[in-house]
Image (cartoon, rainbow, N blue to C red; front, side, top):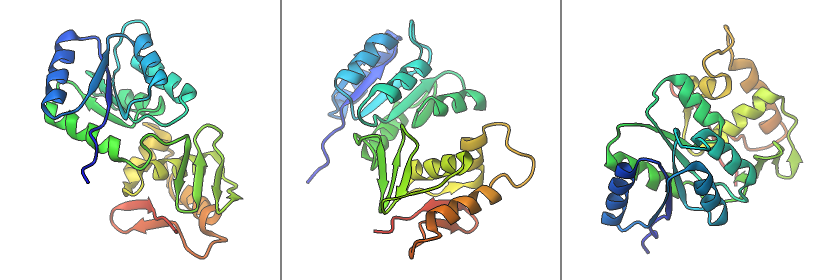
Length: 229
């Protein structure tokens, strides 16, 4: 059975780009809704959550960062967000991720790449799910920060908690050391061994009492979570 086409909401104030994206989506049999400003786009995303939100950063009224933050705070499910921007500096990308974006695309971009990223986001395990992220016996409530494994609360310090969330949101993909450092510390990581201690603490809390370890080291690549059920 074929996977149904995702429903996409685009919040973009440039009418030419909106028209081009509309034509591209129609060509591929995808339904897309459009909004030209942040506030109306946020209202549309909250009233009928799309499978993917394509969100411009520079919007009139309510900018893309604020839209993303409010969506994360108010929506009853996780809506994957692909953020569009003309800014390609690392700090700008980090701001986008910290506001809750799932992916980032710098203008100008190829339509085929935007389409591929939208399809990938719509197929991720967490598309359309609630704020509780589940991988095997592990559950993480994104709002409260509470993490449990097999119903047992995990006693995590803040940095270990951020590492666990980054790995869980990337699952089943492997994150490199540099990706983990970027997501947790941004452009200003600790000078020496920022990961080693915190990964040790995370592994002890997550896997210590369990028979099956979930935190895996992929030698020469990085780290990933592996479902235990």
